[in-house]
Amino acid sequence: MGFDKQTIRDISVDNKTILVRTDYNVPINSSGAISDDLRIRASLPTLKYLLKHNCKIIIISHLGRPDGKPNPKYTLLPVAKRLGELLGIKIDFISDCVGDKITNAVKKLKPGQILMLENVRFYPGETANDINFARAIADSTGARYFVQDGFGVVHRAHATTSAITHFIPSVAGFLLEKEVIALSEAINSEKHPLVAVLGGAKVSDKISVIEKLVKSADKILIGGAMANTFLNYRGINLGSTKIEPNEEKTLDKIYKLAIDRVGIDNIDEFIMLPIDVAVATNPSAFRRRSVPLQSINTDEIVFDIGDATAYKFCKEIDGAKTIIWNGTMGLAENPTFSYGSSVLAKFITNIPGAVSIIGGGDTADFILKWCKHNNGKFHHISTGGGASLDLIAGRKLPGIEALLALKK
Image 1 (cartoon, one colour):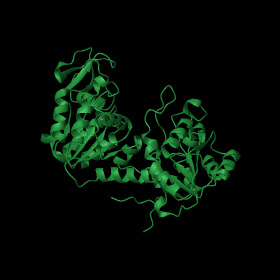
Image 2 (image 1 turned 30 degrees about the vertical axis):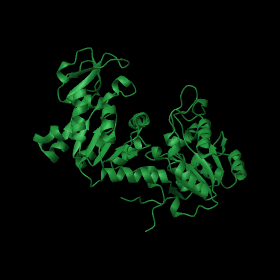
Image 3 (image 1 turned 90 degrees about the vertical axis):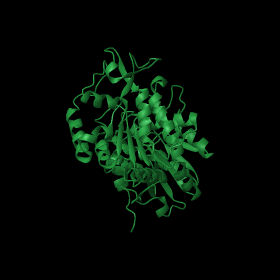
Image 4 (image 1 turned 60 degrees about the horizontal axis):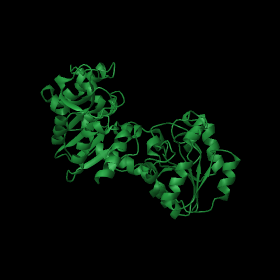
């Protein structure tokens, strides 16, 4: 499956001033250090291409949720420093996004240099998709082209994903193109069996994704806190585990779609739920107890899939040609409850010839750490959380729709 928008390959960028929207919403620890630079590294192919073509590059991005006003906690300065280290060049940084200060800084830029502007979410106009804020960025930078390379934000209609495209010819960067192709090919794959592994917290966050996968997957494995909602729906008592409220109608709809496709006799082999779970009395526990569903005590909480479920899920994944995984199998930030996710990760990376797609967000964070310590490798680890979910669900993404169409 191709990509139907123009990219930086389709335009003449030589010696041009280029405005690039990246997604540098990276985790920064209490000492101010970046703890995971995946999103910065993912933007390098686009930036290196533009540098090779002697462009003047202006980068805009966001970090965190500063609620439309400046907040030192969310400055992009540490990101600029890390980007400079990765590229081996000095990145100029300016603590503003619009105005004469920006215009003057751009004029001083030389071909092959990069200027990073401050967090666009320091302005209320960003999340409001304010046309005037977008115009001010375009006017201040004087950019000839706008390059959207922040896959993690294209599901949002914001000033630097949507409104900005009214003022500057807009195309995609290499990361955006890569993400769309990888996720689209996976969900529409002709390589079957296609197995979907879904976890995370809420059914409500992934209803559209589940509905899509019910129509296209050969098997859906449910873990994480989401599985608790399914198990509760199926009449299982889960002790003191919190259950997502008011989801009965949602699950009615999911099961109806699934039964229409595979028949009621095959439903439990199509949407597979845990057969045992790992429990404890608090999320900080150092010990886990793997128990059958019928043996959960009233004071216990489910924090991971159980040992037998991990084994069963691996058995079901064995032989898959395409695997889409979104959502961890348990409270993976606590190593005690990362067992289920770790077992699946190890198994999936050892399936010969399988295309494995990790759908961003917390799953990507976990998988990256796991791969680092276990030398594992997945076919594609998405940089987008909500964007990857929306793309898998088949929704239109505002930040992509706004780009110039590929010429036929």
